Amino acid sequence: MTNLLQDAYQRTLAYQQSLQSRPVFPSPEALAGMTAFDEAMPPTSQSPHETLALLDKYGSPATVANTGSRYFGFVTGGMLPITHASNWLATTWDQNGALFLTSPIVAKLETIAIQWLCDLFQFPTQTVGAFVSGATMANFTALAAARHMLLKRAGWDVESDGLFGAPEIKVIVGDEVHISVLKALGMLGFGRKRLVRVPVDEQGRMLPDQLPPLDSMTLICIQSGNVNSGSFDPARIICEKAHEAGAWVHVDGAFGLWALASDQLAPLGDGINLADSWTTDAHKWLNVPYDSGIVFCKHPEALLGAMSTNAAYLTASQNRDSANFVPEFSRCARAVDVWAALRTLGKVGIQQLVDENCACARIFADGVRDAGFFVLNDVVLNQVVVAFGDDTTTQKVIDAIQADGTMWAGRTVWRGRVAMRISVSSWATTREDVVICLEAIIRVAKKTIDE
Ligand SMILES: Cc1ncc(COP(=O)(O)O)c(C=O)c1O
Image 1 (cartoon, protein in one colour):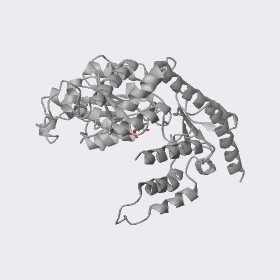
Image 2 (cartoon, rainbow, N blue to C red):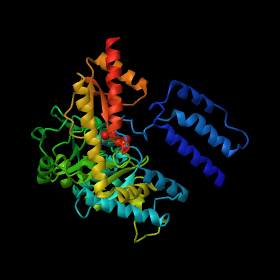
Image 3 (spheres, rainbow, N blue to C red):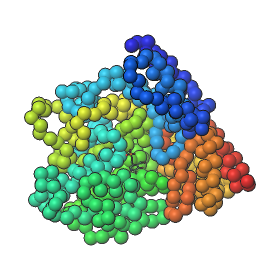
Image 4 (cartoon, rainbow, N blue to C red):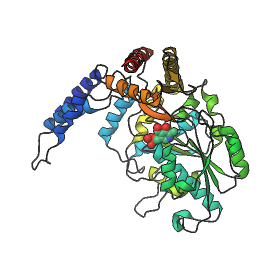
């Protein structure tokens, strides 16, 4: 057993050392190498060393190097060294984070990490929170809490009586709502077609004067951090209007919520803490390993009302039983890495991480503009949306940049135009990386356009 872990450790070090010299997306040879796994399930036991060796030989090269410093795809954080280490230790513990009785230490670290985060984001004191797999599930969980509370106020117990015949909830989203919110609303029976969509401005921000009439049966979903532009819906004015009417406001802050940790960026999120529920991801900007999303709710009774159960075999505990806050029972110990990241970085460290990524995004934007290309968004956060010409040209350049392998950024469509989206979200990205990547972008783009 020890030898096997030592073997894994050596392979881990070698993998990390390879990150800077390998293509960010796997090479065609590496992808072809995955056929090594196309074997029948062995009828007899195999050597674990051989299994690990196979995994490393053909598996490691076929990974996307998102723990390296030059991955800018989607909105993907890297992995802080402390969270890599804490994750190893927690894997060794193999805790079930469902209940205090299945893991006192996970229950303890969840309580502490949620408290620290509520302080960091300046959420109201009664706010509760919990760990889920990502922002999609955090949105689902928060919106289930909203559904519980709004219907309860109307005298309807949705968990017992379901949605057939229930009073109607008006759900409002911005035209730039993230698809994960639509997915969550669909799963919760709100119906994606029944939503009221509010127009947005040129940065994707909801226009508050276009809100329909609000009342106490209204649920408004706003976002802090548009997945393309990084822009924020105007939280203060929306929350004030909503609360005058008794409506519920949910904030999808999958990555944007972390801007609140920065003195410089916090004004973007002015009024976020007036909302009723919030979503964020730790696997994005906090740079903990996958998967790690967090839900917060200002109304403990709403979250518990939607998520708690009373199975007879669960011994009532004075301590935290996480299963009462989230959709799952058995679950991994996500709080360990979040606690480790928060404790190691401290508030200043989080602020530096966020500020430095945003500074790198601005350098990217200046660099591509100076080279004659087009930045399509106001670079207010860590997101840069770039076009290299018309849609066909931009697509060709994105394909060529991805094939070049120096860096990886994905394709998006922003306000009707095909664009490359650079999301700077990793602790590992340095300004030297940005210089190297800009050189690659400009070199590849010019060559592709000239061809
Ligand atoms: C604003 C927003 N919400 C939700 C999500 C979904 O996050 P996850 O993949 O962690 O579920 C994302 C992912 O990029 C996002 O940017």
